[in-house]
Image (cartoon, rainbow, N blue to C red):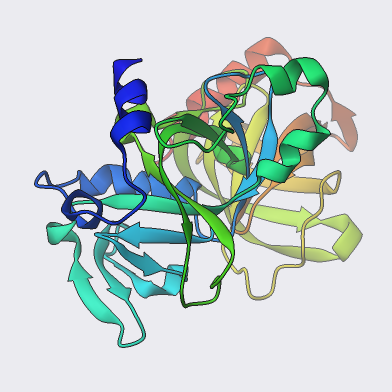
Length: 301
């Protein structure tokens, strides 16, 4: 509370040396996670001042790196693991090494007008100075698809009107994320177990068959990556899929029918509807599922 109070009374809207970069270097591995789940251009939801009854829409328009703006994801250099190694800023694309990162912030639009869509009681819960007063907290929420839901708490650094760039002369807000609050919650009900098992995949609706890989299993669900994505058709939620799994022994051959329940760019999650035996679809028993999981976990051993 004291931090918020003094921030409001003595804070300046002008840039300061602290705005351009502090003395403490930032954990780049956490920045990597933030960039992964809160990329530029992604639509997000948020709630102000830890009030989960007020949820509004926003999006990340840019990152501010040591006080310089990055407007495109392509301006971030990464290593093979996706960890940022440098940021290119300005029209000259000046390179800022990640090792020199001292201040990392998010630029979002000023969505104060959305307050008018709230009912009287929820509007009354907001600060009389508005949700984006300096020092207020904004909790961002990102739906990360199969990876779950990611949240991070941010502090309002200041409201800004940029003088140049793609968002010049528009009301914006600069948020400073508290990276230690960054969390990802897996939306699946049961824990997933990683695997790496080659399979044959068929999509009857698209008359397609090809190779794939089971990359994890969670109860009666499999996450599958299609290996030849250039030839594979677009997968839709609800599509039927046949997965043929051979675990090295004749009696450990599974022909599984599943239904796509989630999909991403490279993978999809299928619900196991049953296994085909002697031309009939037979439901999985709890023991069948345990045997399948054990076989996938011990593949190749």
